[in-house]
Length: 182
Image 1: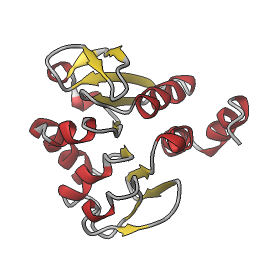
Image 2: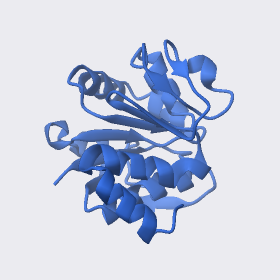
Image 3: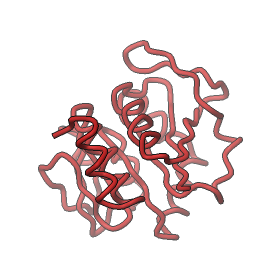
Image 4: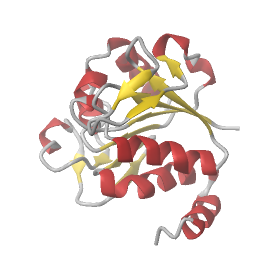
């Protein structure tokens, strides 16, 4: 079973974070909602509070197949301030393990120089932070081990692209039809 860690910081974008978790769990992916705060309760950018499965120090990254970063502000900025998370992103990239980021969160990858020579997308206005990327005007882009998406309205497509990357296009298409996400 594939394992994905989705990271939650105060001010995360609720639609993005919860939709990704939901889509991946429908695909029978082992998803951990991980708080980068010292508490499991994390408040989103629209005052919706969720209970994360664990806090950062409880994650065994050797058992994680993919890291996913939801956007939202100040959530993405708070993720960007988390040095140990950024160290893990670099390690995953070096190992060519998949990384996903949506909305404002691709700025973190750009700041770590992980987008150099790759195609990427982000929330409008954050393009300047995608250092080294070929920035496209699409909903979701997979480029090598990196998957990026534009924002809340692309969250289902982003989740399905992750499923496709981890488990194949057939399952992703089955989920798309079952969820009526055409």
